Amino acid sequence: LHVVHPLGKGQTVPLTPSQAHYLAGVLRRGEGDPVEIFNGHDGTWSARIDTLGRKAGTLVAESQIAPQRNAPDLWLLFAPIKKARTDFIVEKAAELGVARIRPVRTAFTNSERLRRDRLQAHAVEAAEQCGGNFVPEVDEIVPLDALLDTWPTERHLLFCDEARSGAVTGLEGLSAPGAVLIGPEGGFADAERRRLEKIARTVSLGPRILRADTAAVAALTLWQQAMGD
Ligand code: SAM
Image (cartoon, rainbow, N blue to C red):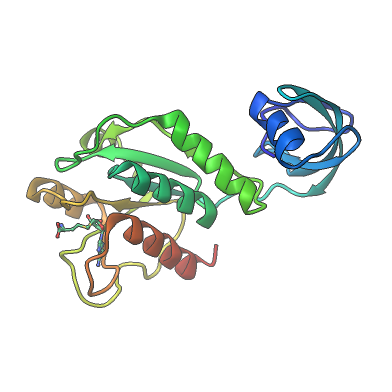
């Protein structure tokens, strides 16, 4: 379970109402039962259920059972698409391991409002399901142009461009920190492409045009292959 409290031996950790419901109602756990918890900073801890009601409860942390394992210093920048596909992108990015998920509004982004808290909850759930102890930060959506205005020069920007068809290229000789940029269903506008070509490294994910959610998974996997992390 993901918790927000600092973890240490004997630390009491309150459960949220949904965690209490999950433990009591879904898993049928009771007082004294063991639970694994993490907060994204202090590693994974074994804990015991101290009190448990249907909507509240507390755990007591006992000992650290795995060290903290952080994601590589890689950001995923993507233009939100339809809700279910955006959820998929956030979930898979959290599973594959990125430090930060940054939705960007591009010229052809046509998604409505984005619920940052919902997406953050998806990232937490993905980490919990996969036994990881790191959760990427999900940011509020920002205009791509504004992000590029203050782009940190040391962070390699990997501009995934379907127009650069052909073999997979652009991932040679990489080093962290990095950021992968995936466009919306309509791709990038010419002005955006011209600007990106000046500051980013152009990446081809292969000869086929992929949907944005597939492209995100492919790009993160290729990064891992290139970096081993
Ligand atoms: N502009 C295209 C169109 O409407 O036909 C499609 C854009 S594609 C669905 C969405 C995003 O996925 C692109 O902006 C790009 O970032 C990424 N992408 C898809 N296929 C790719 C490929 N073969 N190489 C690099 N990026 C790709």
